[in-house]
Amino acid sequence: MVGEAAPAASRRPGRTGPALSRPRRLVEVQAGVDDRLRLPIGEFARVLGGGIVAGSVVLIGGDPGIGKSTLLLQMALAMARVGRVLYVSGEESETQIKSRALRLSPEGESSLPQELFLVTETDLSAILQHVDSLEPQLLVIDSIQTVYLPELDSSAGSITQVRESAARLQALAKATNAAVFLVGHVTKEGAIAGPRVLEHIVDTVLYLEGDPYHAYRLLRSVKNRFGATAEVGVFEMRASGMAEVANPSEAFLAERVIHAPGSAVAVTMEGTRPLLVEVQGLTSETAFGNPRRTANGLDYNRLLLTIAVLTRRVGLRLGNQDVFANVVGGLQVSEPAADLAVAAAIASSLRDRPLPADLALIGEVGLSGELRAVGQMAARLREAGKLGFRRVIVPQTVRRGESWPSEVRALPARSVQQALEEAWREA
Image (tube, rainbow, N blue to C red; front, side, top):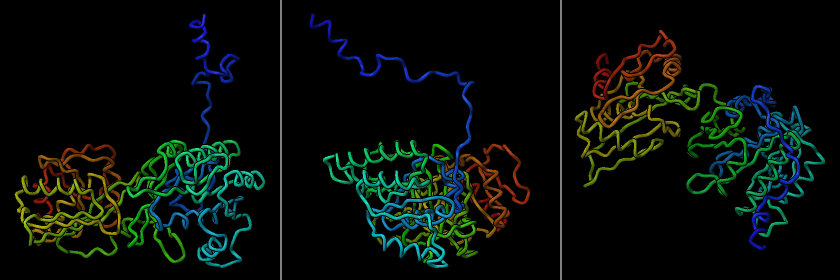
């Protein structure tokens, strides 16, 4: 009967023969070690988890002009001294890439590696043929939105083209064991353009962030199958390219004015790295009916929360004050542990009373005005001690795991009110 034949038609093809895979006991599986290629750029290697994993696919996004191509060309120049590299560009000519390479190489033409190959191509089929003939250890595609597969009807940059091109490059990486780096354009909202599945296909997703009016750039990991996520590398944009910043905390505090009202130092965590940043607050009596609230480098909603707590729980009169908050250096701080420093900076500006120069602040502010505990306190205090801070206000409820450094005096506080009183007790 016709009705009896329907179940047979619904069977998935290719499943009638013997299974190609075999389940294994977990205890029988050998734990391997990632086959990583050593990357001479330390901050880049840190974000990747220690080096470049052979056969991995890495996606790098960022705003136009932020330095993605410069950073990847620096990496290609460094890696070409130990292996073969193919740099594919769909946006620049070979002459333009050569000019940038000479700018990045202080010794000029003689210092350029012999194993770095350039090609300006957008046809992915032709790119795959170049890979077959050269057999590079590292492949750079700048950018994934410019390449296309000729057998697909859609244009380059479409959802279908981006998804299928990324899938082909992933299969290439796994088959040849070559590491593949893809540059991705971003939308107005800051997300990588194209389908969300693109971020699921690749092994690692990195974002290059920074204020175009500041010299510092942050390379942030938001996905990494071979290392920690939320790891951050810090670079400084110079005429000779991206320079590593070995001590970011010292760099972010370099222009800090001691004993200035409205200045506080927060100790934040970027991945596994503690960073000390200067938070500035400014209050000014408003000339309009509704006071302004402006946040630069901070979450706007958390600034509103902090102002509300200072008004209701601490008793500061901010209803007729314009409030401006800024993180120095172009850094974006989203961690709640910076709440207390923001509150202290605003209170310092309103009272026109500077905070002590050797004081740093750590703590998340709750709606009741309480200070909530944050993680990795020992690492934060060690970083503060290395930069000469001798007193750090911390939440009273923080749990002691490992021992805290002896050179830093931790001052516990249960509330924002108590923290502000403690800050000026010995000022």
